Length: 85
Image 1 (cartoon, rainbow, N blue to C red):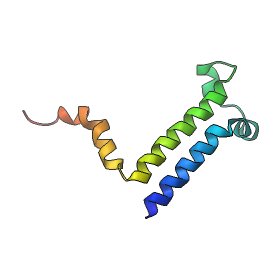
Image 2 (tube, helix red, strand yellow; image 1 turned 135 degrees about the vertical axis):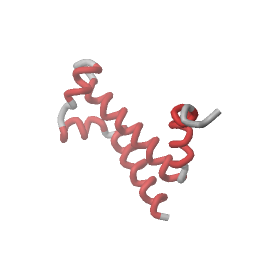
Image 3 (tube, rainbow, N blue to C red; image 1 turned 180 degrees about the vertical axis):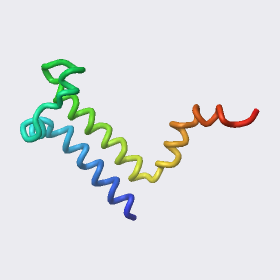
Image 4 (cartoon, rainbow, N blue to C red; image 1 turned 30 degrees about the horizontal axis):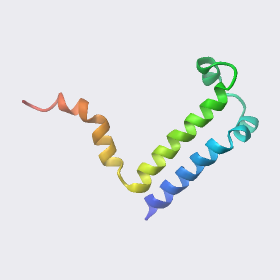
C-alpha cells in the first residue's frame, strides 16, 4: 500500500513540475548545466520538464510495483556476460 501512495505522490509532483515549469523557474532560478548544454533560450525550462518527465516515469514504475522487472530489463545486457555458456 505504501508504494502505491509513494508512486502517486512522485507522479503527481512530476506532472506539476511539467505543467508549472515557469513557477519553478521563477522560484528556484536557472539550472546552469541545462543552460550550458541546451542553450540559453529555454534551456532551464526544458531541463525542468525533463526532470518532471523522469519523475513521472519513476512514479509509474513505483506505483505499479514493477521496479524489479524494470531493473532486470535495464541490466539484462550486462548480466548476460556473467552467465556461463
